[in-house]
Length: 381
Ligand code: AOF
Ligand code: ZN
Figure 1 (spheres, rainbow, N blue to C red):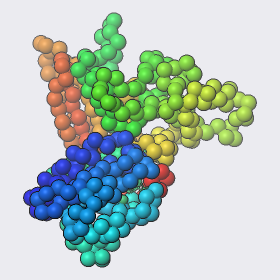
Figure 2 (figure 1 turned 30 degrees about the vertical axis):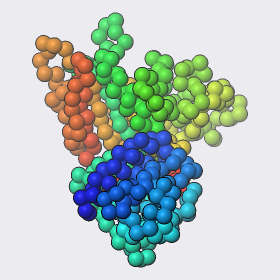
Figure 3 (figure 1 turned 60 degrees about the horizontal axis):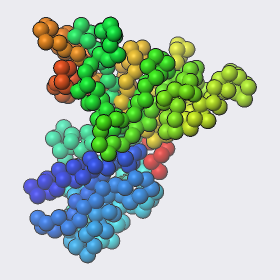
């Protein structure tokens, strides 16, 4: 990869960040077209069923695309999905060279690099796994890659603890952490498709689970795991856009008549989308893998989970957490809190640590073997 192409790839990643996560469940892709050292066109993915990044960039470049190099964060698609193949568009425009940041693992869309090479286009990349560029692009595509690879959304679990590790706010306080850490949560919410809690949190706190105090914020869906449909229709989350995952009562109840069905009808009246999955094997709540798979099926490929201790523990035990974010309330004069120095149980790498006002934020990434490639959730085609 030439140095101007490396710079263009960095630019394409920055462009794609603007589209993320508005184009979900499609990956936010960036494309930069180069003639020599000059940028002749740029594009990012449009929200479905809009154009892919390459097609937007080609339209911007017009005739200048002939003989140009296309630098794209994700391998151009080779399939007819909601839009025609980008490989065809690149070939028709006469693009001579394509630089790729990350392969497309999607079973239907993959094969773009091979198709372009077969048509005589010079294809460069993707950089090998583990390299800085590959890691940067993969991070930006984490929701898409997790949905395609694992059939579930990418899950970031946020927990807030006091210096001694307690999850309860000090007496008389509503929050464990201060305003700066809570603002960080709102910024994070604006980066994901859904904000997840259990029905216990809805009953205890009546949270809104929306983004406040962030400019031009993308609003995620509120997502509630609620096997028994305890969420009252008057709850703040009972609004259009919210998804409630409950238990499939077919065969266990008379759906049209039972209390569950009546509660379901009242919740649906508020605009909430209800999704039914099997109960957990121990009978406590919804089956978590099925709940997450169902959410991916609705187009939610990234989640910020902000649940209470029971659901937090269950997600961790089930191996369904990709990133763990600990917010730790630190007070001047405290000894170094154990919550800052003790890593979580299991295989994690420290991703980031820093301060937020009086509090500290420590971020871990789950270390896993690379995901197998399995059938993608439905919304991608
Ligand atoms: C690209 N460029 O900008 C994006 C791609 O249903 P469709 O037609 O929108 O296709 C969606 C699939 O295409 C998606 O699952 C992923 O594999 C790929 N996304 N490909 O060439 C883009 N967003
Ligand atoms: Zn495409």
